[in-house]
Length: 212
Image (cartoon, rainbow, N blue to C red; front, side, top):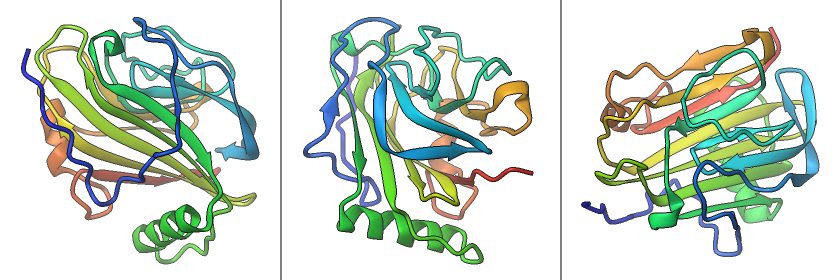
């Protein structure tokens, strides 16, 4: 199996003091992570979050699924949902950060991407999959998702680092219960996300989570 060296893009948030997902196992999630500040997701308020080994976040319960289907059964954020295997290497880490430096950084990013929306972050939840191998082998994948939010507005920032091609099923985007709000990043091959964006920043996607 070939490994790709992890070189953190400058837009990645460093997680030096992050919590590590302790389950070195197939198709597992973190325990419920209690949020210091509630997160508003298209009108729903959540006080906890789960980080799944296979590249997605859920809110009400852990999910062991590795088949990437953004269905209408739950609220889910999937920066890159595919079957991963952290038993063979890599690190999955997370942290809710309210430090001045991180809040200033994510606030500036949101203002750059959405210049017409007033926003100042009061919390940021950051999860990083660092050089985690695909289940079927063939390489590793690195990406980070940031939930930047305050009591009024929430945003998703997804940054992709080194990504190896794979023949496994995969999907990236988000969905809500009943699919009232849903988006799938349009890419036929996983490598295409490295040259794509919806905010004119290569390998970066961002979304304003607003009710319609």
